[in-house]
Amino acid sequence: MNQNINILNNLNPKINLLDLNYAEMQDFIVSLGAKKFSAQQIMRWIYKHNCSDFDQMLNLKKTIRNELKKESYIFSPKFTEEQISNDGTIKWITSLGDQKIETVYIPDKKRSTICISSQVGCSLKCKFCATGEKGFNRNLKVSEIISQVWEANKILKQKKIEKSITNIVFMGMGEPLLNLKNVVSALKIILDKNGFNLSKHRVTLSTVGIAPAIDKLIDMVDIGLAISLHAPTDIIRNSIIPINKKYNISLFLNSVSRYLKKSKANRGGVTIEYVMLSGVNDSNKNAFELSNILKKVPSKINLIPWNPFLNSSFTCSDIERINIFANILRKKGFTTTIRKNRGQDINAACGQLTGNIIAHIKN
Ligand code: SAH
Image (tube, rainbow, N blue to C red):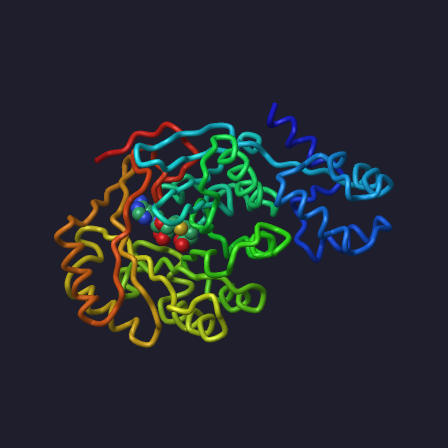
């Protein structure tokens, strides 16, 4: 059923309005003979009222509604599976034909965050990540990125979960900067006051370090940046993150510094993600090395206990080691937090997203 819808959509010459950011919506609506401001009305129906039915858009003239029906449609692939964790985290799967992507909802005291995917699978093959192990299928379209937020909003309303989405993180499947054009367009919809209307301080993109794309990004959109550094030296980083051989730590951090200089969204500096792998990157020496390479980069450090997945050879550092590591960094003046692992019982935690709803984990 779903596959058929997708095949139909690929052949459909009509435009899916969820693929258009505000500027593109204005161009489109003008091409139909309507006034520019109708773009605002349509965006509001879609994003404020979760409406996909042109007949309900009664503040638009009938002639325009008919034109819209002829030339466009509003289609969002539904979540097909759902798993709820003991801690309230929810993992949703979207089936895109025979491929699957994951979206994770993480409620917390003050915020409720949704973690979205930008690609089906991932091409980067970081050694400690389950998504990379599965390989890469394709980039997501703007509508497929945006649909994850749209559908989540709808389901949360249906479930009568009062807390609507306050934060969005691009930390699901895929490397967002390898799908730059579509990710930027989706970010524009997320930030637009006629779209999801989120503040740039509440939207974060995580990247493994595609240095030239970081330089392009700041000229396109300003959002919070998190970087998957995970190692203090090129020797260690090369051994766990293959793309480091192309964009090494110094190229990566230089592009991040340039981003920070131009960004207003990153007031407190960049968030450094550092996965704790026992015996690989977690010694005291590594903590000192890390503080050294970050001396000139305003940053806060988030240590991520490594989440296990089937057949992986890594082990997570124990909590004493993580605390000692964190304290060295704190003494060096870095705000350092240890990430809570949310949704681990349903494989919804970082690096566990493979598109499988039932997967066994080795503890
Ligand atoms: N490709 C982007 C977006 C993924 S975000 C990036 O690399 O930043 C997911 C975060 O979880 C990244 O920091 C990633 O390195 C980290 N991660 C991957 N596998 C993990 C695992 N098994 N346990 C904990 N963190 C993991």
